[in-house]
Every structure is written in C-alpha cells, then in structure tokens.
Length: 262
Image 1 (cartoon, rainbow, N blue to C red):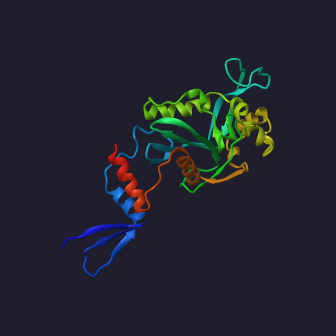
Image 2: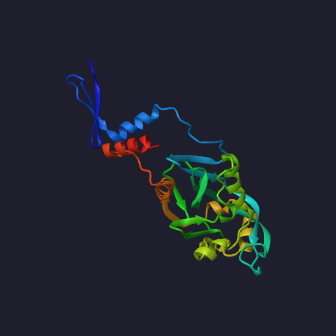
Image 3: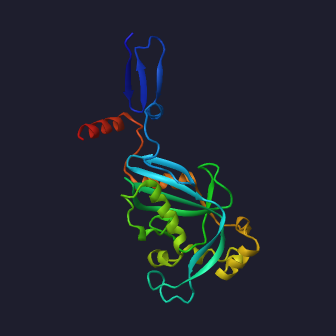
C-alpha cells in the first residue's frame, strides 16, 4: 500500500494508511527525525567541567562548571593607579570560591560576546538548577546580560581547537581580577555584593575567612539571579542566531529553499 507523508501547517500526517489516522506535530516529528540522523554532538574535544552543550545552526552554547575550591589569584590592589592593563598593580590572595558556572556562546567557533558567569553552592544536577549572582570583578550587568563576563582580551578564538579554546577561557578567568568590566559597564558584582556577608566586605576579610573555613562560601546566602541554567542558555542561543526550530510547513519550505540556493 502506498503511503504519503503530508504536512499541513504545524501537523504531519501519514496518508494512505487505511482507516488508521496517524498525525503528529511537525516539531515533534522533526525532533524524532533528528534522533535518527547521525551527527557529531560536539565539534571538537571537551574539557573537564563541561556540563551541557546546545547547538542551533552555527551557534553553540557551552555550560562549564568549576568546582568549589581555594585558589591563589591576582586581585587588583586598592592602591593601583590603573583599573586594568599593563599599569595595573595586583596583590596575590588566597580565596575560597563556591561552584562557578560559566555559560558561553560561540558562532562557528568564535566568541560572540554572549558570555556569563554565576555562582552556585552545590554541584549542577540539571539544566533547571537555579543560579546566583557572583561577587567578582570582571563580571557586570551589561550588554543585555545580567552577569556578563569580560573576555575582551582573548579576541575571537575562532581558529583555536575546541579543547584549547575552552581551557583558554577558564585560564583567563583565573588570570587576574580587575575593574575592566566596570570601565565598560558600570559597577562589577564585587562592589554590588560586598554587603552580603561580613566575611566578604574586603579582600582581607575574604582571605582570612577562607583560611579559617574554606567551605564558608557554600553557606553564604548568595543573591539569586532569578534564572536557571536552561533559561540562560535559551537566551544566549536566541541572542546569537536568527535560526529557530522548525514548527510549521512554512518553516520547512523556507529551509528547503535556502538549502536549494546554496
């Protein structure tokens, strides 16, 4: 018996199936079809800490989790004559950090400017886990993002292999904390969140508390960002590409015509 797949608006229907009516939503059919098409889940090697990867057309959103840890970092000295750059002066401090979540969007492997950093007090369990604001320099509310992470010094990273690209971003995060984001986008979260806990009111207090109890950062009542990992990834994906999921017959025709002209 001849069978014909017909698409009407947002519905896919199987014709010629006798008396049995078979119809599903086009979006569900496309999702199911994608499960049976072999494709690479990620364009290159991953690194430790990558929790979620989502791709839509040329856009790729990567969620990286950095574990709760104590690190020696370079922090801008209060006496520094420059906010950032070659003239900036730093002090080395040993600080405890909660779980850090970095969500970055790439376009054909290049940074897009859609990049955010958040805190959590527990490991990631799902994309629906909530996020908190950090208390760091280099992170600010700007460029349409609530926790924009300054990565401007890195360039686009377009030609860098994926594993090296992701490591470069993580290493840059730890390289130095300064006022680069404040210059571009107002106050960083270091200034905004110092009131949360007396142990975070100054670098000296933070360092002392870290030496006394490295786990104290997991009990701090960090301010909720009002967003989940999924919501941030959704927003960054939408902001970085005009591509959208196929949900109607018109979407499918548009894709067909676009493909034919290439």
